Image (cartoon, rainbow, N blue to C red):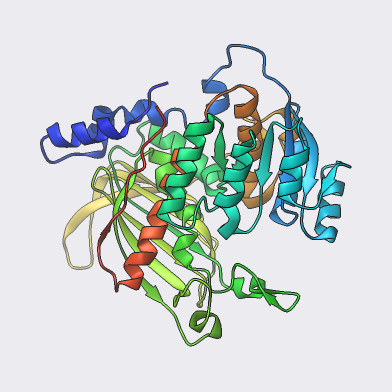
Length: 422
């Protein structure tokens, strides 16, 4: 399987004469071949032998309730774990699994017949829990974000390399039906040269999750750009590129949660402008307060065609094609008249991209069944999952740096490149 490597990116950027277009960049780095694995990894990487049955344990009885492991023909749920008894019972009922553990640690110590663990615990514990599971010999699926800081990103990659096991991040935006459409458009060259992208994750009301049973949860005052993956997946997960630089501005108010939190975070909203490997601008907005309609959406702008995802105001998705006709604007200047058309996003979850039992609607725009299938199929067939540890860090690390930029008043900062699978 041909993948972009850190060395190939460095050598191509040094040798290619300016200006570098998206198309020439990807051709010089092998990115077109690399990105071809992003739509249907299960079908593009055929196993050399029959797939095995995957025995999986599930940890975390809130978000962890929303997946379909018990429906997958190659999966058996052999254990569930949760600190809170009521959530443990909910996991047991959802996945029809009678083997229960009162903690991840107990599961890892006792479940000798388990191949993999799906971790849906609190974000600050993701690396600690993932590393423990990997060290115990388990493949790992983990909720977003992958890490809290750059040191944890490095630790996660090094643990995966040392153990030789799989890590996959359960990023929903990668598998949104609109994102799958954009990935196909990109691979087929329909955008021409992609020249700009923007993404937004706007979710007012998250402060309702700041307390539970009178105690602060991990979400209390959590920095918005430390939760960037619903946005960064819209670019990195479509093109395979890395984000290289960022400048970010934050906004906050006098809310108590911004005055006293474990993260020393003063912001409700953060808005970042990233530079991509091929020199494009990628605008990301993670906003958790304000008079906005909310949602997770993106726009991919090309020199031949653009794709605008649905808007929270009821419009879209739409496709814009560079027009051959012209018109005069209200100042009398001649301009191209673009062709505008409504785009009906295919319901990919109804297709053979998924096993028959999983072809039903699921959470976050049909993404949950894709996440379930991708992880189980990758482990069963001994192949790299689409959102492996390198992609997970490529989605996560840019937001970590963006938050540091916001804390420094919008200073432009470099985003480290942690490499790619080879």
